[in-house]
Length: 292
Length: 268
Image (cartoon, rainbow over all chains, first blue to last red; front, side):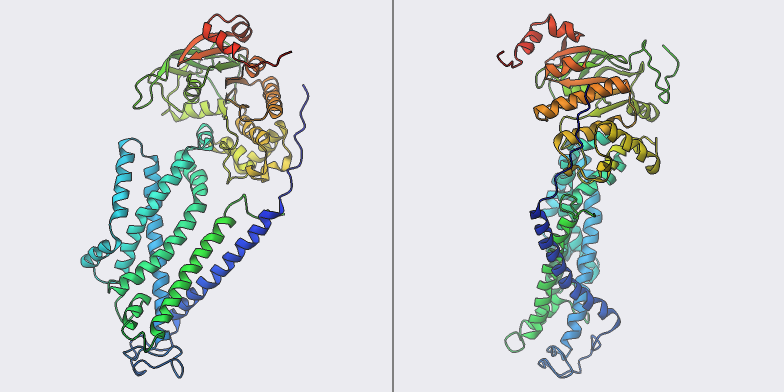
């Protein structure tokens, strides 16, 4: 019998994916710059603020300039100080919610994917109900049970998002479990727990991480919404949502008070979404640059 | 029956079949009928077996039973003469080491996010045979055996063609030197020329490694060249089994004759 020669070299990568990759890494860079800017503000706010958060010495609704970079609000508090603490609260809200959503959602989703028959139906129905349950109502219940703090808001957002993440994870895991490489892992003697860690999670990770970044942006927006309604972090720690609410009445005369938190909110959410987009491709071996 | 069989030194035991199905029936949960019924098959060392039949005849289900992936509703799956118990870890470990599988679709059977080396090493690592370091030379040897370049271990599956991927799958299935290789339509997803090469490779492994093949196929020409014995399945039942030459040459059952007649031939 002749040994067939299959040692033909694998064809070199075409040029187009390279071009696509460099564009992708550009989105990653832009995203990192935007989100990094906010993260930097948040970090600096931990060690230094231009004014104390309850310092009302600035005079009402002063314009930008002078001792106040962005001016002051209607109580005479420095707006830049508020924007900085707002950055911290936004980043905390995003990270906290996503941590809760990822921890609960991935665990529940993986378990749900392994469930079969009536258990599978029950879990899916439960997740659907949880998703249909309004986040706002959940937040109000939690605030009523605890108190209006950032923690309550984050808990409410995280819980609501964990249902969304769990449903996504369940579908993604089911799709992976149907692949032959899972059966191959079983016939290779790989345990289920090891299969989940070695095969399932790496294969759902690209889609999941993009979704989690999206959830981060949504959590930041949701926290701003809850703060706007007075269900978020209490004064004197300014959240962007509460800044928007307070600046609403004076928007025509002192627009900076609403524009500053609004613009930063948009920049953070866009930045995080760009990071998600860039990450997806750097995580995929099919488009990842081969280390020569 | 012989004494406790020892997987570490796989001595070809000709008296006890390695794998055996005894009056096996399987009904899927919620299904009305048995998918396979009353099936008895034996796989002895050196007697490669082909399972042929139409789509839906229960070939793949039988393979799942033989792989210990499904529990029969009634009847027994026996490994080295003892009933296969999916809960018996020690027996399952010996079983997994002795019985490996190659799947139909080489695109679905390799984890796209793992390097080929890690994929091929998986049986060695999961069965606790080797550490990462001691697995490496065996992986290189297995890749060499299936005719892949040495640097294949560091690459990802998407860099390989369908035929090469099936070679990788064969390398994974043979790296822990199993006695039996189950193959579920191993060449049906490949184009004709690649198909011939992979069939040649399987024949080579069969001779050089002393592998016993259990092949599910609807391609009778592949069966004829690789397997000594053939079992014909129709709607979950074995309607005919025996030596391949006899079954294909002088089919006794009308269904077998129909199968043979349905093979497309080039007008000569």
